[in-house]
Amino acid sequence: MKRSTLVAAVLLFLLAGYAYWAQHNGARDESIETVFDVETDAIARVEIRREGEDGVVVALEDGTWRVVSPINALADTSEVELVLENLATMALERVIPVEAATERGAFGIETPRLEVKFFTRAGAEHGLRFGKDTLTPANQYAERIDDGAVLVVASVLSSNLGKTAWDLRDKAIFTVGEDVAAKHILVRRPDDSLVLEREGVHWMVTTPPRARANRFDVMGFVSRFRRAEMVGIAAETAGDLSEYGLASPRLTLHIELDEGEPIVLEVGNKNVLDYYARTPSRPHVFLLEAGLVEELEQDARELWSTRLFDAPAYEVTQFQINDRRVEQAATDGGDVWREAGTELDKKTVDELLLKLTAIEALEMDIRRDAFPFEAITTITLWTETAEEQIEVGKEKDDTLIAQRRGDAVTLTLDAETWREIEALLKLDPL
Figure 1 (cartoon, one colour):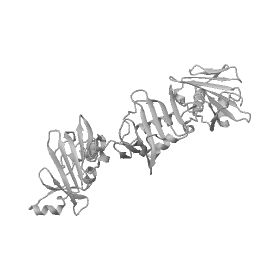
Figure 2: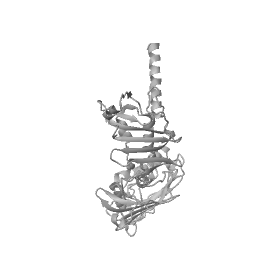
Figure 3: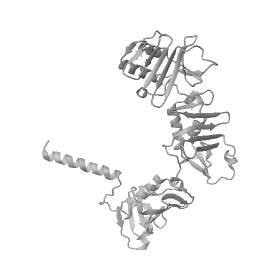
Figure 4: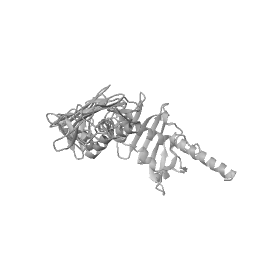
């Protein structure tokens, strides 16, 4: 490659890198003339009025953005910041010379589609009235309120700035951070209750019959409600809750956290696609998407874990295997595993742990009054934070089943998979 070509390639790479950085770090292109000379953090109030609708006002109060008209509610900060960014970076395509006041009617600014005013912290007022599209629909006419100049700007600005109160309000139902862990979940339902409890590092479905829960499913369940958003407002302040089925809620969710206030949600009647809901911490009745209600109605069995062990193989620090067919089988967590005096190398141990921690039950069933036989194999795994144990045996019909310690359900095992584990242990098949 010629030196000049190489230099040109390097320069092109550097310019592309700067363009990417500028786009993602809010740097303004100084070569582009903007409609307003203002920075986003200088704006303290925005007023939006769309043709034929009530005005919407958002204002910065004690460092927090709020919708102050036509409702009083917390604002969605990310939505407000998009509006501010559009106001601060709005590109000026060109200025239209207007000779006489009568010509202004041709631009549609006397009866604007949209009027946006904003005020800085210093008290300065700025704004635009958006009129008709130009002959090129990608642009439209607008009047700058500051000086009455008629401008041509991008038509997309009308969509970006023409927000409703619903667009700008905070739709989050709860304000709980992901860093606060849940420890108890209760869902009251018409015919039963779903109860989950965190015990150490494990989650248990304690709704009878007691069973280990799939911790990832439980974490996903909690996360979805932490992040849940309203899909609409039924009433800002509800006087008669019975109208929405909330005087005696059909479903109630209560998630207790390690710290702070619990997550509490009440669900009432269905409204076409969604459901009326409320939380005691807020006065309004809102609409909750049906998918979240289905989460509350799910059968407890859907949360049962089919895995014999929660711990992944790489977290196991020690394990022990006791079997009626051999004198003893155990490991001290080192590189050598001993089975009745026979040494197994680390590769065999690693393969064994991978197979053990990957086993999933073919099906699960409620435990009978007592385990239907004396367990033949007992396996215990330890990690730095937990201990897990299972018992394995065979039913009269030769079905292989396992029992997790603390569970009231049995797990049916795949015979071929268990044979592979027995082979690694040098045990005769059950």
